[in-house]
Amino acid sequence: MTRHEFETLDSALLADAPIIALRRDRVSMPGGAVAHREIVEHLGAVAVVAIDASGRVAMVEQYRHSVGRRLWELPAGLLDIKGESELAGAKRELQEEAGIQAQQWSVLCDLVTSPGFCEESVRVYLATGLTSVEKLDAQGDEEADMAFAWVPLDTAVSRILTGEIVNSIAVSGILSAYQVVRCGAQARSVDVPFDLRPDSIAQRRPGPDLKKL
Image (cartoon, rainbow, N blue to C red; front, side, top):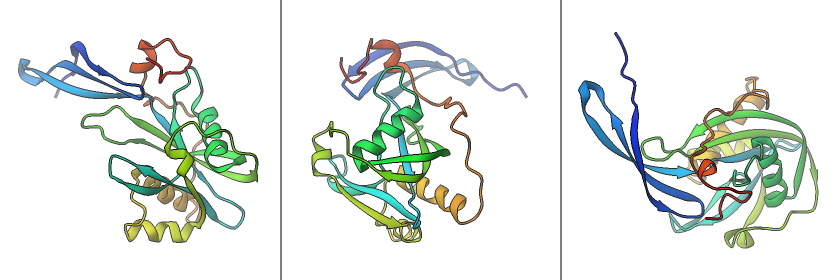
């Protein structure tokens, strides 16, 4: 059986904002039909499960206006610097949000957070061999109100199951880290290409700060 090739016939940009944009694609469908699909363009992101020698995970609590509450999350951030590698972005975010540097890095998982309508993808790293350093200057309003805590890995898993940790990136990263740290699963090399990283916004904006229109 020959599988249908979904081809984008044309696109229209509907809205353009600093960290997202919205476009409408005309897509060829099986049987000769054509359908419209609205896609939220995104810069892509990275997150870090930083685990210290005691088996604790570095976590931050940040206000998220979309749900109207503070959420416990991993240190994370947008890939909003043109040409910056995912690993460099992860190192920057870990120092900016947690004041931590790490000696060992590996890839835990890659996520497509909302594939039905958004191209956001996230690479989640495992960081160990930690050292406390001076934080980089916070860049966002919410980050000025950010709390920080060390959470034992087992406790973090339990808080996922009780609904205390609901951020999807944190859930995926913590459970993946548990498999590596407690169950002997193998994390991937940081050299593995991040093929899912979106580039729609990066191609359209000159940079270096991709949040600037």
